[in-house]
Each structure stands twice: as structure tokens, then as C-alpha cells.
Image (cartoon, rainbow over all chains, first blue to last red; front, side):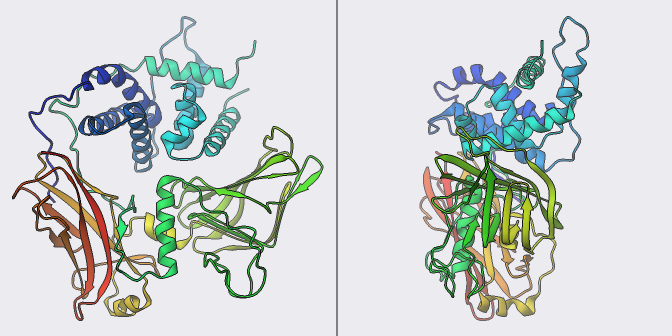
Length: 160
Length: 358
């Protein structure tokens, strides 16, 4: 089966490099947090950024486009994979090993993808319900419901 | 001091993010991923249907369902139906049999709910979704997860019913039900955790159901209906039944389905691999188009924009575009399935082609 070949030798479109420099760390981290897998997150982030690069001249809201592409690509990727999750590293705190944080990290890894995506977008990216709804392509009420169910599940799984 | 779960979550996510060092990479370098690949499964069904084909009501519903599933959008309010008499509803959306139209009918592409009575007990009062009910749902994942969400205002407060559905590919069930508490501002009452109403896929649950404060009388409920599953799951590997094809053509149950909403061809691309499926909606199976008396043809609408004679083998379409000029803009690929014996058109779709450059 023939597939398209990438463009070669073209120059970076105006304004892209500045956007890329600022957005790439966020894109990579968002993709890893949603997939909960570093290798997959890197692939997802590269895929999203490559699409943005290709359509840079016509995409009006690059931040929103990038966010939506990453999250939806990550959710679709995870749906096709086995159930195992990567163990993501944590920046350590001075007070040695933070067991509670490890447990919360593990519980996050076990959430359904859309629920985890909502929590990452809300509590890490700091997006509003409306922005998350825009990213996921659903209603704000659905975001509220997904977040509520995710928090409920986390609270039940974590030791008191 | 107690730290809230939300604060702990922010802290953990922030620490995870800071521990991740972004790799050195740029989309212009040589390691970037291919921009266009063959789509392996039916994931996107927004390719335009050919307007010149006759469409029965069911197929129109399917097209709408697919579009709504893609956008996560809401579906029009269908309840309560004012006409409680006999005969099918005038708008043709009701799945109920003639002469037995339920007073409450709420429907999304993923869930169909009919009931003779729906009440919610909240704050010492009784609510019912009778007027201006907003019906929506999370399309979720086919045969895995979806929701039906009803919102309306009554007695001066907002009221909600959220139903969450799950499936294991064999059965579906109601995994959770939630209703609002009748106060202003409203909040959820304690959720009713399932599984409830476990039912084989393709069948509806029928009966009276009490789920805490939520009462559903004369309920007929189905999640992940067969039509939706046919259009959103990969049906590859199923055996064709060539002898039945003329009957299916006559019955109008065959549908040509695109595996992508559009074909995006970047500057410099040499070709595009693409696939369409011919689905038998009656049995929810994919028909082979090789050796079964059915063939597929594909043509580019504007050959000046994209010079290509697509090579079709079964449902695979190979758009070779290394001959002739490629102009930036849009055109479309017209795909037709025909009966070999008579040349009769079975179905057709037009898939947008978006060309980037030169």
C-alpha cells in the first residue's frame, strides 16, 4: 500500500519556531500525562506537532488545535493498546519517598483515558470546563460529570 | 491539616510533568512521522453521502448518528411526544412499534430510552422530564462506554438524570445512575452504582426499574444499538454471503463506509492508501467485494486539481499522484459500489480531498 511521503527541504513557516519553542515542553508533558506512557507520549506529541507544522498557515488557534490533537490522539492510542501502564517518575520532595503521591499516581494510571485526560487538563494544564469541553469535543456538563466520576474513583481507591 | 484530593492531584501531576524532560526534536527534522497513513479501521464517518442516491429513513438516521458521534454533540429533544395515539411518530425517529408509542422517548446515537413514566424523587418533591428536556451524551467508546444525559428545569431548579453504560462486547449494562438533588444550585444525589439491567448487545431491556430516587416505568432501554456498532467497529474478517447480496441491495441494507472523514494530501506526497467498507447493516458484517459480484469504482471529481487514476482492489483504493500536477485546494473522491451483473448502483459516497501545495 502506497502512503504519502513527507515534504523535504521546505523552510519552517514564519512564526512557527517561536511557537514551537514555547509549546513543545507542554505538548510532550501533556501527551505523556494523558497516555501515562513516555514512549507513546513522545509519539503522540510529535504526531500532533507535525500536523500543526503542516497546517500552520491555516490553523487559527494553534494552542487549542495542539491541545485537542494531543488529547484525542492519546485517547485513541490508549484504546488500541494493552492495559499495562508506564510508571511515571515523580520529582522527589525533600522528605524522602512520598508514598501517598506514588499511590495517587498509580490510581491515576488506572483511570479510563477520558477521565484521566479531564483531570490532567483541569489540575495540571489549568483549563476551564469550557476549554476542556472544547478540547474533548463534548459538553461542559460532560466534563463536569467525567471529573466528578474520576475524583470519586480516586477517593475510593486511595487509602484513608 | 488535611490536603484536598484536588490539591494532591495538582501536586502529583506537576511533579510528574517536571520530571519529564522533553526530547530534542523539531517537526522539520528527519525523524518526523509520516503525515498520511492508511487508516486501519472505521473511525470517522463524516464523508459525505452521495446526494443522488435514494435514502430511506434509517440510513438518514445513521448518517446523523455518525456525525453526532464524531462531534460529541447533542441530539434533538424527542420527548415527551405529544401524540400518544396510534401509529408511528410523524418525525419517523421513534423506534417503537406502531400503536405503542411511549410517552417518553430520549435518543442519542448510542442509547435509546423509551418509558411510560419517569420520575425523580428529590428534596421531598417529584420531578419528571416533561418539558424542554436537553438530551445529550458522551459518545464514549463503541462497545465500551457511553452516557445518556438529560437536563431540564422544573419547579424553579435544574434537574438532571445521567445514565452511564458499559459493555464487554457481549452484553451491555447500566453501570451507574445519577440524579440531581432538587436544590438551587443543584448537585448530585448519591450515585446508584451498578451493574444494572445486564442485557445482550443488540437487545433492549424491558421492565419497570427503581434505582434509588429514579423510577422508570414501562422502560425499554438499549445501549450500543446494532446500527451504531456496525458503523464504529472494525468488521474485517467476516465472511461474505454472495447469494444474499441482491436481496440486501433490494432491501437497502448495504452501505458503503469511508474509513476517513477526508483525504489530506500534503505537498510532495506521492500517493495515498485508503480503504472503504461495504457493510451489511442487517447482520452487521463486512462484505468482501472480490469474487462476490460486487465491485467498487473511484474517481477524482476534479482531475485538473489532482491527476490520478485510483487503483481499486477490493475495498482498498490506491491514489497514485506522482503523475501530473497537484494544485492546492479541495476536490473529492467519488466512490461507488455496483452489482457486477446488472451495473446497479448499491451505494456511493463522496470523500473530500484536501491538497496542501504546491
